[in-house]
Length: 242
Image 1 (cartoon, rainbow, N blue to C red):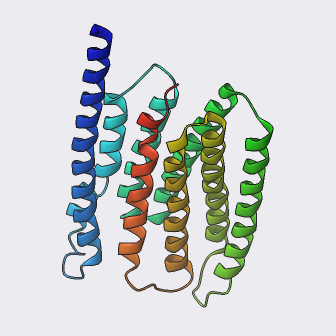
Image 2: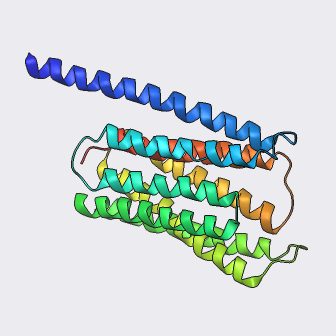
């Protein structure tokens, strides 16, 4: 009876912390989207740099606060979100350092998902689907690069190479999140996977806007899908128990 009450208390505490986290996350996310998408408020760069990283930082705090075990999965996920927060700040200053910070965040996401999948044990079906997903992403990167090269903008070849490396890394995040979902057998494990898909979409729009052509309401599209992406990825902390 006492154990049952204890489990209920833990569940209630986690539910409450998720609610608080969600409110902080989405209030700050909406404020950032409004600031970035409004022409009259876009000059408030100092305020944007202050508010923009809060959702990712809130995700890191949420993960540490609800830590279900001492598994490396949770601190690695938190650190990846901290790097996203730092990337959010630098993207407002210079795209290249910002891209570098997001690259390192995806290295951590990929390492984390791959490590846990390995510890769970490799199974044939998840591995085949993982390989298929990765192959699809390689084709996508190839076609995406060809599309960016059709731009009339002046773009340094080195920048396109950097985008290529980043695209490869984010494709690994997506593929390994799928592998972890299938390897774990956790039904709701598809949620972080959907987050990874949204990350790919958001960053693809950034690439098109920066290196190919302007997109109407680009900030709304990029930030809404990005914030939903990291929110869904952060939920891996309560969906998976290692």
